[in-house]
Length: 323
Ligand SMILES: [Zn+2]
Ligand SMILES: [Zn+2]
Image (cartoon, rainbow, N blue to C red; front, side, top):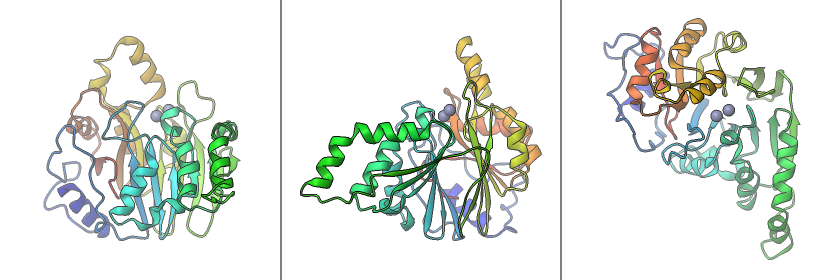
């Protein structure tokens, strides 16, 4: 909790000095190795654009970390990035703690980085649950090639449920359980009064289509890596951003993995020392770690793998953290 109070103060006031703490050092008391899901601090950042970490997890079935999902909330409008397991309930938890725009019926815009299951297992939930709870508009989905096929198959799989709910006593509307799918190529993929979204390609092993996103809002620029190895495209597209949200694995943890898994992770993901080099080139005001693969490494040690060579502000996110 100390972390979030201090971080909130830091973000509210760019001139905030971290009580004599030098850049690159901890701005909070060390967290325990496996903290429970943190609660959203509704009194923290009061800026127009808020980042809510709905799921910071990976394919691992960690009960404290839901599947990958982030909400960028601009005033009253939420924009979701990825839809891992549990995101609708995490959004409800954030709403309960004061982020009112994350009410289920407001979950209407989704941007998918790539189609790996840990980033998309919540798509059925996001298509159906907000509709059952009152959403009247289609879900607008922006995703890589293959997204339409995935959405179509999910809706077909739930055809009996949709029929019962729309034709029976529930009297559910027929629009809120549909999707408008926009399969995109790199470039500006979305724009409205709140936000401009740019998609850029990243390198995620053998995936033919994997993207990061740059969100520009009236008061913040936020870049999300998605899943990737270090790549020049991210460094170029993240220049000048306020916040870089990046996936990471612990180098010490990797060295305890079997050789076959070491080969896989090296080809698909980014180590903490590699991320430190990326951050030195991007120079974000704040680096947020998510999708952390720790393999038993204490979270503070993961942060130290970054701090060995990167002196900027860095924090390791948990579900329901707000920035
Ligand atoms: Zn992933
Ligand atoms: Zn992935």
